[in-house]
Image: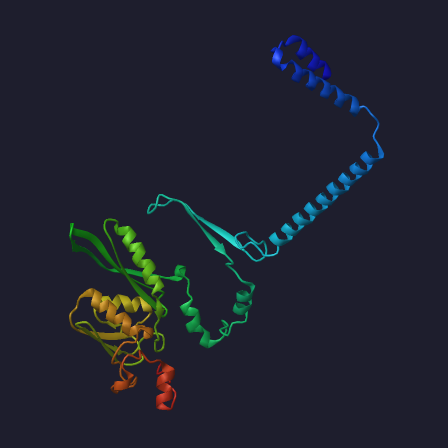
Length: 326
């Protein structure tokens, strides 16, 4: 550095007024160079040791602070991150189709719980029990559906401020032929096949159990009214067949009813007839005026209770119902 300073001083010619200041700088640099070559004194050793100790303490304090920050970070779990044990993730991918040109995926979290599996294995409805049949019927898979009838197919129009909006209306009845029946109604502007598929899905979701006598007919005479349509259903003996309205005929085939007679009074509009008939057969929909179950009129306080099964009639009569078939 001294050599560079001398070289710069020889090659640079400053003004006469700045020469004293330049000489003072050179002398100070020379004195620093000479002082640095001297051996260290004891006071210098003690000061360097003190500086080393202070630096070491600062490093230890920094390590403690970093460790405290790490402990505070992991003290509470981050709920936005997946836990390999608690968060069971299953991803289902859906590709493109005729209805939608876009692909999508659904993430199932905690889809299967071991507790649910144990509960299902210890269920109170085993398959070998007679009273388990209604429960098993209510959990029937859609793949087991053997009856599907498109009973209503028409063109409907909705008047809006922009004009008349035309669409296709579809009513579908589905059943397994063994005590399950349901119906679905939907509309679509252009695609008829898509409307039928959507109506079928809705019908499957609305399926319910039908309580049948000897798995072939209804238990007693039933009467119900929906809007301006009134329907009377009567049980019939073996081999009588289905002598009823054509829409009720298809509903009974889907539900597994083989012997019945029906009379429709008032409006015979298909949607009203189908709605009223299924409401009568599905006890969960609470149809009205269904009688006392063995030929007599129903009580006024029993309005809206729904179709009565064999157990209810047996309790009221005080004796069992014996099948008449040999």
